[in-house]
Image (cartoon, rainbow, N blue to C red; front, side):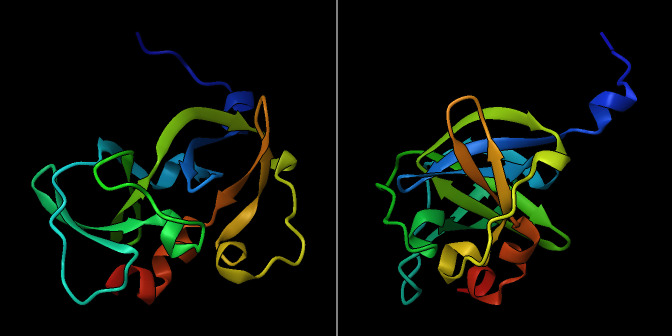
Length: 153
């Protein structure tokens, strides 16, 4: 049944919380195109170690990137986890993560500043949100997918 959204509901952001390495991340729903099983990935030679390979999703071929390895947080075990299909503008990629946990709503006003964080992770974080049991960084998917290194290997 269709339910009418209120102005109050529309003032909330929604994220998918996933695990990459031993770190939780929130991916804003507006960039999410799907969550798939992490299977049938064709490896490609002579690419960075964080490029897992190629996969087919709904008839289209996508590059698969191990998010934890790309961010310097370890690596995922082959054939396990989930593929988070993300798109921003013309770019689309499958991010291999250990698990996709839950959907979380948050008030944008509660998005916490991260301060002066640098490094591989910090440059792709838009802020922090608090879930029921912990605080997780919200990925800046537009910045992540704008990085030619990620998209082209």
